Amino acid sequence: MTTGMDHLILALDVEEVDEGRELLSGLRGALKYVKIGHQLYARGGAPFLREIQAMGYSVFLDIKLHDIPNTIFMAVGALASEGLWALTLHCGGGRAMLEEARRARERSGARLNLLGVTVLTSFDEASWAEVAPGCPLAEALEKRAALCRETGMDGIVCAPLDLPVVRAAGAGLFTVVPGIRPAKADDDQVRVMTPRKAMENGADYIVVGRPIVNAPDRITAAKEIAGAIEEGLAWRTK
Image (tube, rainbow, N blue to C red; front, side):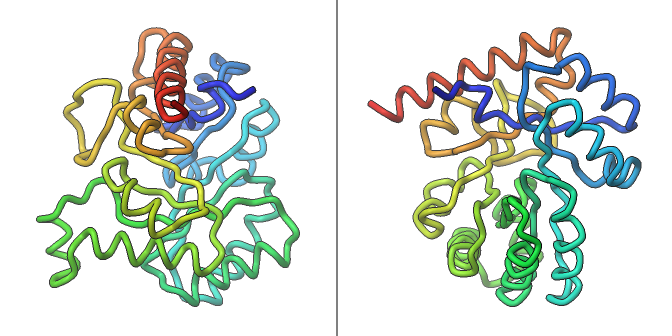
């Protein structure tokens, strides 16, 4: 039987490896999945990923690989040996890039989930129009989700408000949803949703960072979010 914690990914949004190490030590046994982004990967590299895994966590490396197909083939091949649970690739890299990522994973034999990133949660319609004039945000989401399905990705990372479009176009792939806030927050995420509502709308995993990292009692904060996840799942199965 799964619990809310089985659908919760902690975004380790801290500046230093030592801070991340201490935080994870305090949460050991309470959480399963940890997302590592650019900053901590740049500071700690593969040794830090292995250290986190040795603590019992499953690691989601979120560095949104985006380059020419051959470079991505080599990068995924190298990272596949690190025992990661999941790795992100930016869908903007196109069909050939995603296909080479899948080919590298298959060649490695690793049980690595490849996740396509559709459109960053920091975009709204106005800011998207600046970088993709003439292409509506919803159309880009639909095309990129379909591309993930067609190229054999395992899942899709999308904003919570994009779930209806992404789940339809990327049918059969699991969804990982950042931009989750237990309540209204004043930060750089603009397309956000509560944990319960995201699960009701079809999220398979939600990513939460600051609401746990900055909480006075992190374990209690994680448990409260897990409880909201379970409420959302219960509503979805009615």
